[in-house]
Length: 222
Image (cartoon, rainbow, N blue to C red; front, side, top):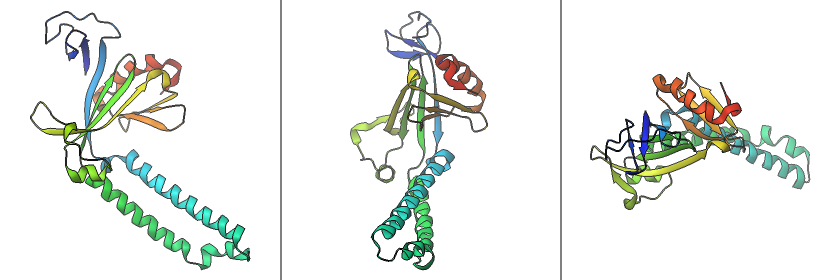
């Protein structure tokens, strides 16, 4: 949704005439921005699930490698390091632990419940806030404390709690990938890792691409 920011009211308006005070808004790059809401469940979001599984698998591989190197360095019989995986039963046990870890990850992501993400794109960068319906179980599944002072009420009178906030300046983006089939835009920082993902509506994907590309110029790729 394309909105106009009124500096006097410090609020958004759907038209260049402020809906709150009636003052005309000077339409510039600083006063226009794009905002929308996206509702998702972490368990149904493939990048979140695959990222958690990838981290678990990488941790298991590193631990096995450390065990192998430790056996190779400190064991008097160096041949035991070569037969450690085939004769000690560590490898089958690792697969069992890995499967159990995947089940725990799915349980944790399932307990996190539904989350509401609010995206804002302006002249400076991309901003996102993540809200959930507050409960002790959902907060425990996210490894965050249940904070009553962080609970707000939306326009429909429902309680919600801010659990995450992220900001990314356009000048700090080193790569941008538009994934049209998945309706997702991935923004990367110089560290090389995906720093932020935007989830626009399918019918607004092209419009948001047109808004983002000029702000990153040669960095954006399609």
